[in-house]
Length: 485
Length: 95
Image: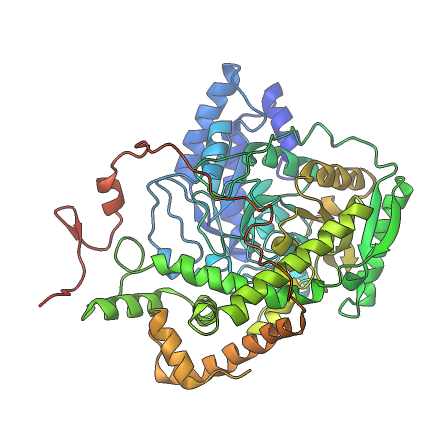
């Protein structure tokens, strides 16, 4: 059962071949047995999951089912879950039990899905290797047999590792600069970052509010479509949510790709990319040509500025967002504060990890008097130049394709000595968040036994087309079905 | 671009994060590297470019001025580090 997709499990539940209680128990047993190798879960909610599974079985029996009724999955530990600890990977929220559900959480609850627990992540979603979690690093299920522990990517590394290791068939995730696509690529699973504003951010603990977007992770594109069907939509509780019609994302998966115009951004096939990685991506593009797509080179001339703009905008917004953690209303408080300033400064010094503190300090600096114009305003202007590159490219082509990452999963500890080395990991993903367009990572081959991700980027609100393109690719390839040994 | 010890100490106060003396040197190096990376922005010609705040230029929606939230003080204060009689407790600020 653990190798089946959400779509397959849903059909088996519907036909009565298996009950949700049986399925839930099987996945819970797998987590118990296997997750000590990966550390992909921070919290497992066994009792609640089994109770929810019993309700789901009753709903199925009563003929009240959605495709998700009784299907097990997990939430990234950034989505608030009423009554269930939500840590965001931080000591600051080690014991935080939210008194409300995120909209995404409520949507899955409403659909009858069975949440098995909360997945590990880089603290406050800041990181590209999942080594920044207060609850310990996550290990990539790939490459373990060689004895080297590799990173799963981040920040949604727990979700990616759990899906790759078949501990859950699907998991929610979030993406601010690559945090869905990069771990999906490194773990050999399929992930989608939707258009900014497509999925509600309400109750999704904020990192950089103009970039954060909730999204999907599963093994198949079809399962990503099933997830997005539940997650997408306007939410009055999120002031940046966009009021656009939500299509049935599964309805167009089987559209033929004949005539699809693919652009290859030349800046993303630069010398940062190893020849072996490039070969896998070129092979994937050839598959698309066989499916009837046409390919041309395009240019994103300002893409090279994306990391610089991001490392002003994201820390600046983080410094404002994370000011709410003050040791007063919820979260960590230091022992014996001697005055209010001591309460604030020590609670924050002790509650936040090193990378979070670095970004808060950089952001505070960039927003401080005398520097605002030179940093924040300049970065927001460059952001528009980057967006314009994408707008121009989508006048010529339907989708863009590139590698998701410059190299496959690296060994734990390899990039932790200098923050900037780690930041460069997101060189192909960050511009997409700045522009706000949707993008996926789809398994597209292996280099040295490690998965390679193909990034497919679309115009605003083109999630259905991206899922269609990914699904068609998965009909003629089996990279997404490969299982780590 | 370098960032001085004084800058770091000042920013730490603004950010309400205690930074011990022995941490300042490491921060000088790390923040200096990050600011070097960010300085690439200077190369971009942005003279006639408007700053971008939202990818789809959305503006804040207004809602009717009606009460939509219920009072959940007990639920919210149940997760606070210290409360008394419905109030949040902090160290004394007025002598």
